[in-house]
Length: 89
Image (cartoon, rainbow, N blue to C red; front, side):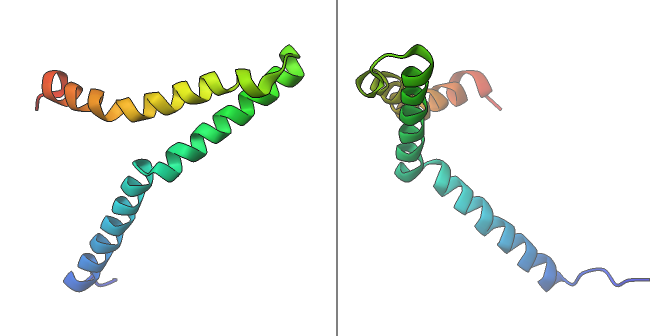
């Protein structure tokens, strides 16, 4: 029969998990993530426009990329409204 983990081992596991959660949260709200997502949105739309729709993509692809960036910037505001009026615990 195996011994149950000690209190210290359990605390270490919890602390490790908390660090991972903090890291994930920091990444989710970072400007690096928002800029990378905007770039990938722009690039994928540009390729789509160039090879599928066959129009000049480099200017036209900026619209969805900016729209995506604006949506990520406004989501925290709407999250606060949602928490205040809808989520109510």
